Amino acid sequence: MATRPRKTLTLDKAEARRIWLKAQRLDTREPFGSGPEATTAAVAHLGYVQIDTINVVERCHHHILYSRIPAYRRDDLAQAQSLDKSVFEYWTHALSYVPTADLRYFLPAMKAHRAEPKRWASVGSREETRKLLRRIRKDGALTIRDIDTDVLVEKTHLWASKKPSKGLLERAFYDGELAISARSGMLKTYELIDRHFGWEKQPAPASERQVAAYKLDRALRAQGLVSLDSICHLDAPSKKAVAELIAGRVRRKELVPVAIEGADRTPHWAIPEVLESSEPADGSLIHILSPFDPLIIQRKRLKLFFGYDHVFEAYLPKEKRVFGYFGLPVLAGDRIVAVADLKTDRAARKLLVQQWTWLKPEPSSELKRQVDEEMQRFERFQLA
Image 1: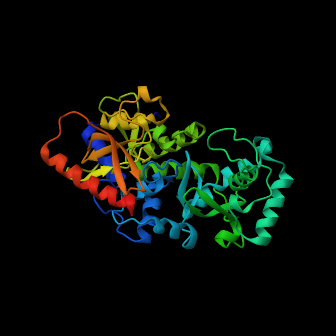
Image 2: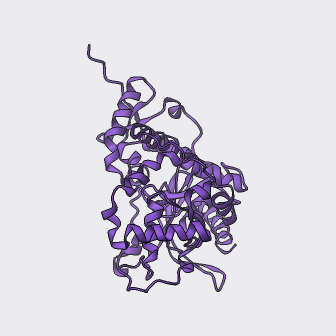
Image 3: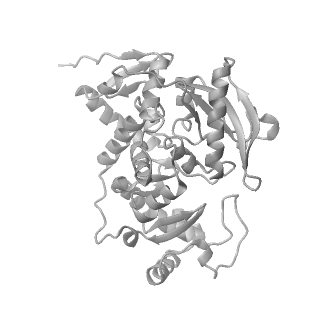
């Protein structure tokens, strides 16, 4: 007997934004409290916090946490990574901080890297990697600066290193043999992964189905309303397994099909409890967001929910930029009201406004006052 299709609930975009902002914990000022435990809680809730090298303003991993932890200190993340070991670094859609409690879901990816030696053949032989691992086991954790025996080479691209050993370290990191035990700016300290975590025996890796369920649950928690694209951002191979899980949960009424106004062809789903009505976002709450923030990084989703099409213009020629080199979206309540191209002059201890663009409608004097107050707070964070 054929089953009847589940009724699809239709939401307007204001309601969709409310649900997403609540899931992202951007609807209240201090959702995780303060102190080192707040950083661990924020990473655990979001599922990952992206890392990036650009530091025109504070690097994005610190910026993302600051947006949800007003009293955030950079040392709190260092403590979580190096002392508490409640977060670790690995690849999600980009290099990110991830809850250590989720590590078993990344072990299959590490195993897959080890099974593709040709992928890393250009950085050196497997024996060279073993030699480096033996050195770390004997002498302790090290950074690329501790390796002074390299014959320097020309960079192949902007993010490359002149030291060939950097490739060997990265290979062992992605293979799951090394962990990044500490970070100072973009300088990483590498330690044997079992020694870093104090393992006598490595955790059991998750199965393929468990990894798919983890990705679905992570998205439901941090996004509220999910689509197949938002769950599997830059991860198309996972879509088939995730779609099968979604179908099963819909049949069991654990998920509700949702259509968002203006996006009938993009199915969404949510946990029933998420769809219960609640208060809209506080309109006086202002956030100056990183372009790598989880709310901003999925551009199509951002445009659908907020009607704002963000372009990362740092990679565009100057003459083609509209909002500036490093535009930061300014969120007021549930609206993106402006884009600020900012730069921190650390020597002069000033936050410079390179360009400011208000989006329509024209801001009220009260909104301008609220944004100015947040800019002052943002500057204090940058210079702390």
